[in-house]
Length: 177
Image (cartoon, rainbow, N blue to C red; front, side, top):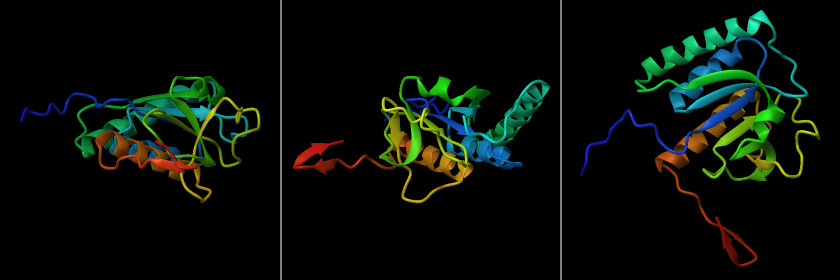
């Protein structure tokens, strides 16, 4: 059996975008997303976002989040840093290949959609929930922004690492999955 090179980034890269929550919860989310193994963390502005970063504050916030990610990567002995970016309009990232919105009632997470976006506490607007958008569910409960982001990340990383395998879904005697 060959040696595993821990410096190789696993495929596909996983991106979690989330609306900026109130208070210092954004720092906690970045820390945990880094520890879980997310490759790209994007802070989002959505139509119903309460917190918005603008002007000179953006660079200061991003610098702080990148420092949090670096410290979390060191603590978890992660061999590479995630990219931390934003703020990006959710509608801009929603059009990215493999992107889906996290929303109750959506389908199961899949590595075919490794870019998951979590909306603000008020939810996605009807315009953001356009019919062509992929929708992924994270369970029956309504989750806070940071909880949804961490849940999405844990599910995708578990799928990518092979810790869990997708279960085929049987619909009208046809197997999908």
